[in-house]
Length: 310
Image (tube, rainbow, N blue to C red; front, top):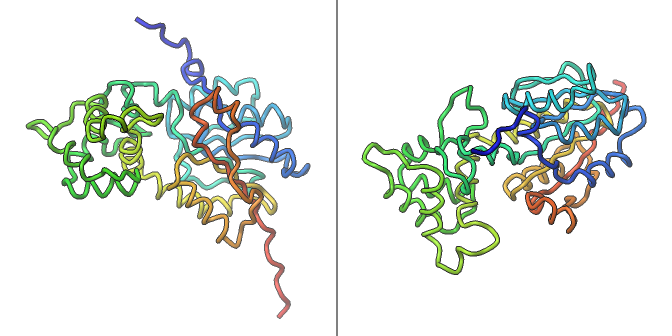
C-alpha cells in the first residue's frame, strides 16, 4: 500500500504554473502603493501562487477563495507562517463579493494535480475511479456519470463537441451510450477512457495528447458549469479592483482563453497589460508538463472617468 500523505499540504504539493512570468510582470506593474494592499486568489488551491506573492511582498494580505475543502486545508497549512495576513474563505469565486476593493485578483483556472491524482474524484483518465468530476463534492450536484445517463446521444455529442472541441464527438457519444449497463450506469473513468480511445484510428491513439483528453475536459466543464462561472468572474472581478489594480488569469484551453481575451479587449473598465498571453518556456514545460497549455493574461483596472460639470 502506498504511503498516505501525513498532511493536506503534503498531498497538495504541486508546482504553480507560470510563476516566473507572473512574478516578473507583477514586479513591473504592481505599484508600490498596491504592494501593501490586499489581493484575492480566486482559485486558492494548495496556495502555491499565493505563497510566492506573500513571500515577495511582505505587506500584502491575502483573501483566498476555494470551495474544495481539501485545498483549503492544504493552503492553510502551507501559508500558516504568514499568520493573520491570510484569510481563507470557503466559496466559489462566482458567489463572492469582497468587503472592499483590492490591489490584485488572481485566478488559475486549471484543475490542480492533486485533484487529478485522486482516483475517487473522477477527473483523470489515467486512474480508474467513479465518473464524478465535481469540484465541490460536499455541495452535491450532478456527477459526470449522471450527466451521461441523462443526456441522449445527440445532446451528449453536442456537449463533447462544444466543450471539448472534439471532432469525433458523434462517434464517441454513440460508443459511450452503447456501453451503459442495464441500469444506465457507466463503469468508471478507465472504461470511459478506453471507449473514447477506441473511437480513434490506431495511429492517433499514440500521440502526445491522450485521445480521451477532450472528452474528459468537456464533461468536467459541463459538470462544474465552468464557462458560466468564468463569465461571472470576468463580469465581477473588475469591480473588485482598486483603480490601477491588476487582474491576472491563467487559462488552460481555448474556450477559456478566448473568453478572457475578449473580456480584456471589450471591457471599458480594463486596459490590457499583456498584449499576448504569457506562456511557459521550454524549461518549465519540461519540469511541469501541465504548463504546456497554460496562458497568462493580465489587465489593469482603469481609473473612473471624471464626472463632467453640469
